[in-house]
Image (cartoon, rainbow, N blue to C red; front, side, top):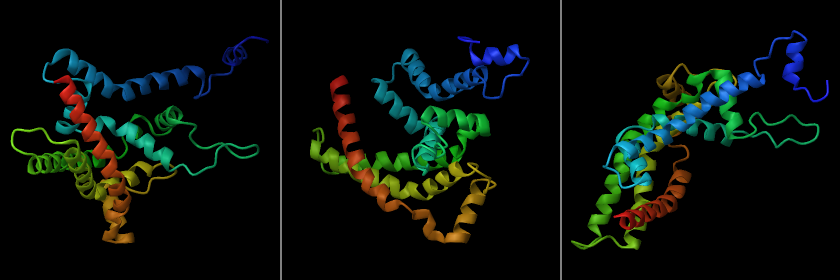
Amino acid sequence: MPGRPPSVCRHARGVAASPTSPATTRVIQGALGLVLGHPFDTVKVRLQTQTTYRGIVDCMVKIYRHESAYCLAPFDLIKVRLQNQTEPRAQPGSPPPRYQGPVHCAASIFREEGPRGLFRGAWALTLRDTPTMGIYFITYEGLCRQYTPEGQNPSSATVLVAGGFAGIASWVAATPLDVIKSRMQMDGLRRRVYQGMLDCMVSSVRQEGLGVFFRGVTINSARAFPVNAVTFLSYEYLLRWWG
């Protein structure tokens, strides 16, 4: 009937709604909204109830530094899945890519692998980031203090260099678990290969040797220097501006 939604027509004919019906999709979208929005809600609540933070950026950095990266796992998982998507964009006569974008990727993982699927690789991510965040800030603070005269703020050049080398140091330390995290996140896309994080580590070493743990360290370091140099420079200027 013209103008009548397809879902209504199906129910009118006595056909049950499919698992991907609009109602199911809305439930999935609502659940995803809670999962993906939780980190931002945490920052909002901390700012509303505590006075120890200087602003949004300071709050996010301190939560990430002192607590864990577990709440960021769904975002990282979606990024890795989309980066590994090698199917060409939809063309006439060709099948569409598995994921149409970040939201579709999240909804597909939630539907196919359940809520726990969004946290695949989360423990490897947490173990990667917890010690390396310490290395990150210790390296930065140490270099800034070494090359800044007593009683003065570090210069922009010092901040850039210290931030860049802090990024490299943290990524050299993080790369072994970053490899495991990425493999765990891709596991389950078509079939399960690993029984857990330890099994992933053992299987990877057995098949590819110890060098597998440092696969990608060069590109990680090349990316880390400019990104973290600018990050710390921006962070220092924002702290001075707010302070």
